[in-house]
Structure formats: C-alpha cells, structure tokens
Length: 88
Image: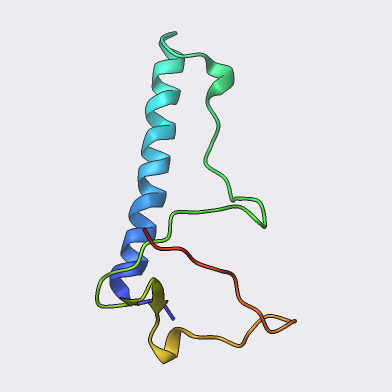
C-alpha cells in the first residue's frame, strides 16, 4: 500500500504528461509542431522503467540499500530473488 504522498506524486506525474500532450496537440493544430509526433500518454511495456517517487518518510537508505517499511514488502517473486536497486 502506498503512502498518500507517494500516490500524490504519481498522480502529479500523470497529470503533467497529459498537460504536455494537450499543449503539443494545441501547437499541432496551429501548425507549429508536427502532428504525427503527438501521441497520448500510454502505459509502459511490462518490463519498462518509470521514475520511482518515494517520500523521505517512506524509506531510509542504509549502505546503498533502500529500506522499506514492512507493510510495503510483498512476497518474493518465483525464484526467490528480487530486482537489484542502485542508489546514487
């Protein structure tokens, strides 16, 4: 379950994507941007990457590892290994 702040950030990113789409669509109707390049925002591919938004009260970073609260941790995927995460 996501915390309220994290959920709001995800909604904000989606809203910005649609705002950009509508702005480009407006420019395309005026002839100032190629209409064939304007596409509605869509879901990523299954293995696609997305900007991860976490608030500082949702995680801690210890020795390069993200520590999530216990309620955020789910069962491991088949095979028992999770995905590596690097923090910079």
